[in-house]
Length: 442
Image (cartoon, rainbow, N blue to C red; front, side):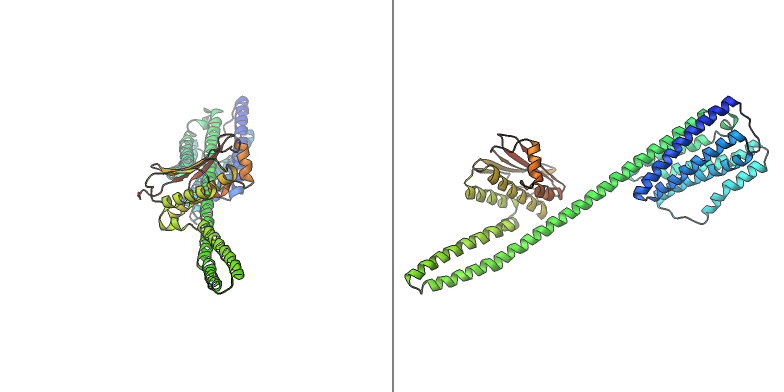
């Protein structure tokens, strides 16, 4: 573009001020992209940093041209504008396709300096000089928008849609350059429109950052859930191994020793027989303890008969052992769930009843389990003195006194939640909710 357009001073001042504002906003967007790139090292944020950095340089070059009207500045303005459009396009391609650089891309990079040299130094016709460059820049910008609009992943759909339409409309806006902006018709409003496009792109990038952070958080949550489930599974497997070892080895050894002592008991005189009777009583007590520990480690009823019979047995044994009035409310059937879910429900009831014995001894309690279409619900409520408000409960949980952390770990690994509610004078209620993943009814 060899024609030099001498603008009146007031117009030049307004244009320089608008260009300076656009440069500051563009530098801010480049800094934002650079900060995001440093945190995650995602290639597309790196390329957006480069693109808006080049764009800021481009604004500085046009400001230099406006002040000097030197054609060298005009040449570099055209070159850098083309490179900015190509860098934005490349950032979009890297974002959507994880593309690798191809050799023929150098041809696209070569067009801006080649045509800029021809337009500035060889052509006197403004329309002929400006139109190919404008079409190139507009096409690259619209192409950037189309690439982003085609990127339809749900997590980043809102961000890619905003970015895509921003670039498409921005690319269409480039087409008015030969007709309006180059003739001074848009001064200084053309710069303000470009600022709006930069801000729209920045908003889309912020949405993208938020979407990617949410996606990483979800992935981390799933990873932690899998880890929690694995740890719970390993914990239960160790309990099962210990239960089998106690049942198959220790209990059998106790029974064998008791049998031998019984034989000796029949062959000794009365004074020694009384001592052996006492030893036999101790062995009976030891066997009962082993059986009780074995049952706590791995309830055989849960494996043999299912969740409801195991819970009824657990509540009945607890009430009898502690001399408490504990009622169990449940339907005749429950939805069939995984063995992990059954075991988690059993452990929650077991731990909750242990809390009742520690903090509400002698008070009545109720265990209730039922199912909705979507989830299994469980409540264990006592009518004791309570633990106070939420602050007291939080402190008790933090100190590990209620076993709530273990309950939440088990239920959380299944996608559920555990809630604790208490107040002075109205007891404690523990509520567990587990999503039902199978709908077959037993």
